[in-house]
Image (tube, rainbow, N blue to C red; front, side, top):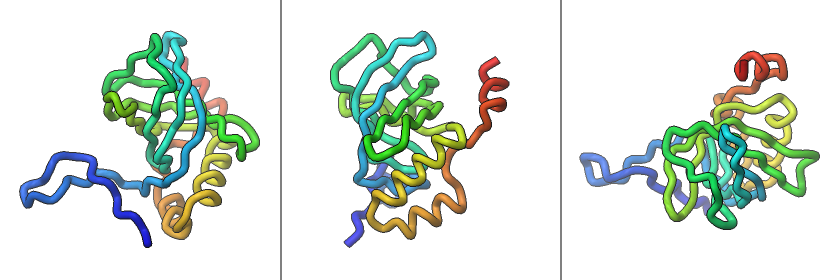
Length: 151
């Protein structure tokens, strides 16, 4: 039986939770690192992986204290993938529970690794394949495109 999506906002006018998520959260997680533009980095685990984002739970407090709207880099290091998966992302929310991240982009190899990780690892992958087909939730950039964006 599928778990209903978790409410992500305050109750709407009808009293029902305001569900703003466009992508299904999975029960999957992966170790990784979150880095700020200044190079400050914290390690932890990305949980509730989805095509649109994830919740990053730091191992310990570090020099990096993300705030909503901050642009960061998330490097996922899932043991079942053929290499790291690097996302540019934006902080959606931050609390004691972790840092909610919205994925903005990755490279083609990262996209392929992440799609394999999510679709092959999660239950109900048919729905996830449809989400991936319609809108993966982030941009897939070529190496040249990423270089131009960073200049």
